[in-house]
Image (cartoon, rainbow, N blue to C red; front, side):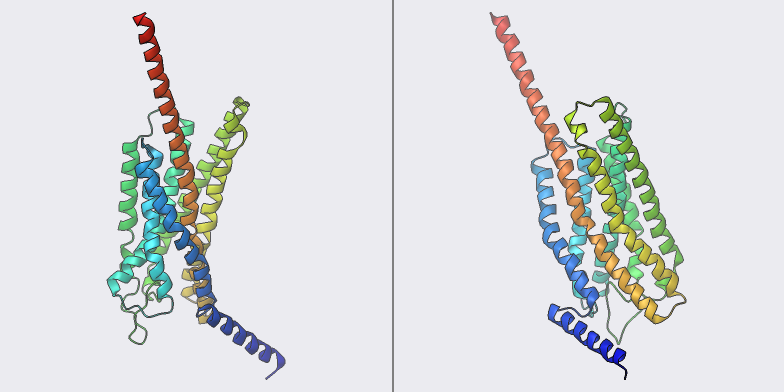
Length: 329
């Protein structure tokens, strides 16, 4: 045995020792803990706070709050599934096949629900700025769009219930992994998810670019407007786009590569790509926290509108009282 082999064995031993001390079976599980625990710890209170604000602080609903409510519900699906996903990594699943498929579907419904709702919010913002005086937006239309979105996402999630087929490993069932070989032969599944994502990305980019252009034009025409001058709106739009791309692009590249190499490559390459898929799925879960930023700005905007309406109403009442008082004299 040469020095290189001895060094490699020592490194593997140290690596295994670190994983055991961290309570992980391998580095992928450590990465999962690193992503999922903070998402759960912060995501649950943030979503509960958003629901409380929506139902007890927002007095007048609009298109943005409709999309926000659906976004909160969508994120709650992921928060429900994550503890089971953490528990299931490289461990036998003992809670039944249906519950496994249900929690798996929650993960994928959350991902594509988030993607489509992000697109809806971007398009809604663009329409609001581009056509401010036309009745192209309404609460009823927003509710209809969300209903269609949920129907599509849950409808297309039905293949999740057959991801594992009749696969078993030493008579043990696994969840969130060990998908059947038949699943990866269904090319249409990968084609659909890739088309949905990249099509949504194109719409997001186009809408974001146009919104930034419109805001830049408004800033030029109104140089004294403090809100336009500080570029906060532009920063929010660009930040949302960057977070969207960073959260979802790695997973869709990983799935595409895994599907391509699964058919013809060596097991070592497939194993490494499988780890890439797991890690990129962890990265996508961060979008749940990024949505909290969206919650903040939408709720802040609606509370400001409510305060402006309250001030306007108070001013009208004072005006009527003054007129009535003057008339009495």
